[in-house]
Length: 458
Image (cartoon, rainbow, N blue to C red):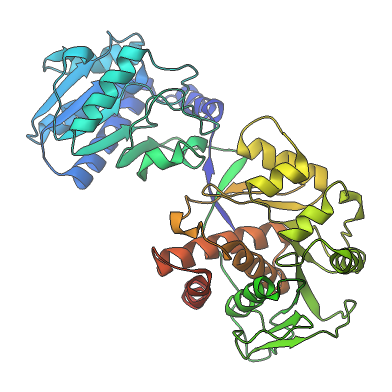
């Protein structure tokens, strides 16, 4: 259920070194990168006058190559440099550019700005004067394009080391970098284009992509398509959202375990307080949305923790689970925990490192698959696998959407996907349904759009 590699700066350097060791020189890679970026720029921004900002390293070298290729298309191109090139490849690229080179501090703006100042590997803030010039020129441009990464962003953890403009497009090479997906950098990237330059990458982290879901066959019945039980509590409406989402996500049978009837549920969802947690037909159980923190909530959770079912735990169940990971029953495979940032902090305390590092450490500590929710959702498994979702639509930040994700996740588990794949598939479907629902949606709209999202995966 995971796709292309998402690399660190070190993994990217290793991949380039392997290609160079095999006989491809740096200048050839730079030529490929610049040509590919120029093609992407023209496709996106057209032939408007363009200013390219070049740094002293290989990112700046890419900029000189881009300038040459844009001029070959008869585009009005200007280059402004922060400093003379320092690397041999960048010096070569500069020598191939026959146009003038302005200084960064004196450069005047253009309709299209291309930032090739610093790319992969930046570890310190930009000088104040450089940052100010970049922000000024970006503000005055109509289209802003970054090469590799926005200058001022770290490569591996999504952090911004300086003020960073909001770009309309970022062109990177070979593979996405972690900061293309991790906030706050991800919000500054714009459309991400990954250009092939003949470098094969390998990474510990992958992108979450469209899953392949099973198509119901002639021999299937409601239980073979997946039985999901959703345990309600003090606020059954939240659990009802999970149940409705599980049904729309393809589960063949969904039961809402609640003593209070909920009127807005699809008729396909069975409601009632009596059930057998040991029923072998149950494929997955959701507990937590609207559960509450009282004695009855604790009793319900404790009962399920020892029932041997595949569990999806969210919301109140996460609060009740704090410091009790040893009680998680793994007879049904790794349980799946779905915390947002606040719940994550309560569950695991402060963990050093990027969101990827935090999710991986939490998965190991809990012995569970972690869906660390947010605009940059990360899924981590105790076996070390990690995947990142494409940036989520910002309108997912509304009440009830987390309950919907829990229901989708349970539907994926009940249909036979193993925990990590189920979590990744659910995150993808959640984001795709949100994109279909569009801005202004509520959780109910998200559920209605799930049918189309699931259909796209069969």
